[in-house]
Image 1 (cartoon, rainbow, N blue to C red):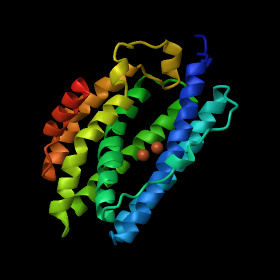
Image 2 (image 1 turned 45 degrees about the vertical axis):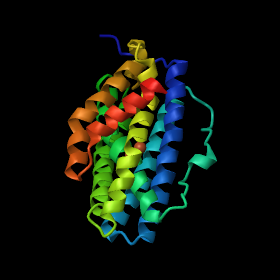
Image 3 (image 1 turned 30 degrees about the vertical axis):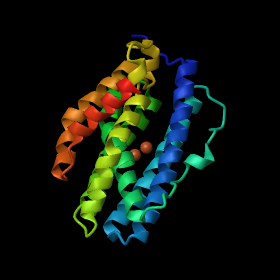
Image 4 (image 1 turned 90 degrees about the horizontal axis):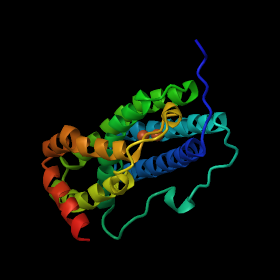
Length: 243
Ligand SMILES: [Fe+2]
Ligand SMILES: [Fe+2]
């Protein structure tokens, strides 16, 4: 039997370079978020969890870059410096911590688990596959970290205000996650098999995973902390269709 070959397309190189950039951003955001957790006197266990995640993301960046080079890429990642960190509002720090916990971890890292599962399924290139194996393993812990932080915030002395902050922000975050994962490109249902072997997936599949995550994860997990995710989701769809 012939050995499979893994010629990489421009799409493959572009996507893996984008992933390097995304992992740098995740690392910086998580490191900054952990500083915020220190400033609001979160438990050492949560702090340790945050620092460990920041390092995981750098490992992902290194592995993603290795894949990019294996695919024939030669460029340096173009990092948007302003996005490598968090921005404070004028409200109490706990409000901003709640927003980031919800958006980056409870939404972003939660949907990342099934997304990477799907990406990994079609991925046969050994270099790319190794990255997706590691990322998938880590994302489960990153997701759980987010829900632990949110649970802690919503049990504390500011629970009532912070729950209101989360409820208010949730529809917008749902809108953003749908927009960034292919909602407007749902018609693109296919990519070349060679690209899939390098760990890529068509936009329609990203969009489908986001929708499934609502039913499988978000409704149940947000419900457990007293937040109605279905209502926020419906609102996000309504705003989208009218706006
Ligand atoms: Fe990552
Ligand atoms: Fe992560």
